Image (tube, rainbow, N blue to C red):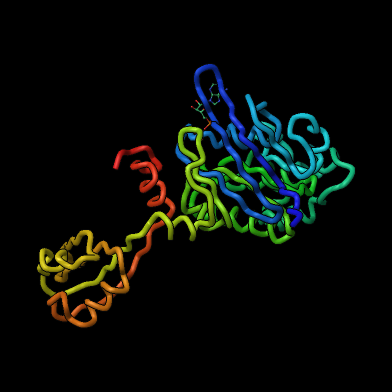
Length: 314
Ligand SMILES: Nc1ncnc2c1ncn2[C@@H]1O[C@H](COP(=O)(O)OP(=O)(O)OP(=O)(O)O)[C@@H](O)[C@H]1O
């Protein structure tokens, strides 16, 4: 069966700087229409990967293709179909948002008009505001609008929301999702597992230059986070030793606040644990507020590396 052409295709890509290996033996296929996240802590190799794909760095070995083009040999062809979020320094502070987008549009013979870009990036209220008077989040949206001016087939974003407050971050997620609705591809890097879960249909987790996991957020959580937390409230303290004697319970903890006890059980089989709770096997009397929490991508990273994403040891 003939495979469709990938939006981005990396084969055995390695990038070395002297004795430092930034990216090692990375093979990865990103399909058209995906929002693909490259995740990992500081120094994992995310930016090196992204910049190698867009032709800003040359890999030491391996091949990178964007659709039918080679990332090194066909840079001019590739430039016409990709959008890369520029640095803030490329904005002129004394132009309005509308003027900025008109200026960048004038560089292209085709592409999106500012009248389309402004609603796409949620900048309707700021169209006539000078760039120098925008907040950090609004500037970030202008940068993404600039990356979209050429109506690219693939948009590349390096940590697009790292400096934003939660509200601005959500607004930007909306803009990225709106772009994807146009059947375009987005490749982004992020430290934030929350962002990856909210936005990306597939993610590659990198650590120390290597890809250590690849899949949908759900697949990765299901594969690597086999334990769930079963939480509920009781009136009195529980006999945790008894509860921990059940085979699927890895650990149990409780804390008392506002006259009641919150109990958290880490379970390898939450269905069995809930069944025991409902049938009274834990001998705890009445209970309320049952909550079952599954792991997240942060837990996946912890499971794979023994470290949190912020680099703290487990
Ligand atoms: N130009 C360079 N010269 C030497 N070493 C480099 C260079 N660029 C990156 N590196 C090294 O390669 C490794 C990966 O860096 P990279 O910037 O790709 O990581 P990252 O995952 O994007 O990190 P961050 O989240 O901190 O931006 C790091 O150890 C970094 O110091």
